[in-house]
Image (cartoon, rainbow, N blue to C red):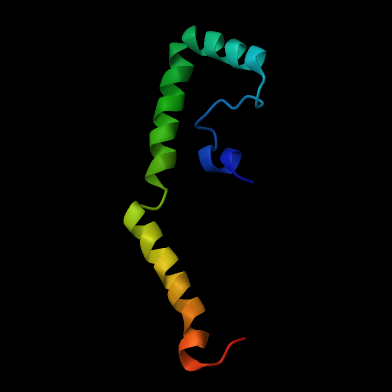
Length: 77
């Protein structure tokens, strides 16, 4: 899990530490304006589906509230 699921088809991923793969990918994208445009649009679409900062904060606070309930009632699971 992680980055591939987060970016979907909105990015070109290369193996960590593989400078040759990174260079090949950059050179390929420099020569392919249509693919750069596709990635740019896909990135906007992908990011539009992510939760906002406020949504994330609200979710984290709700988890904390849920976890704190047993402590407030004296009944720890």
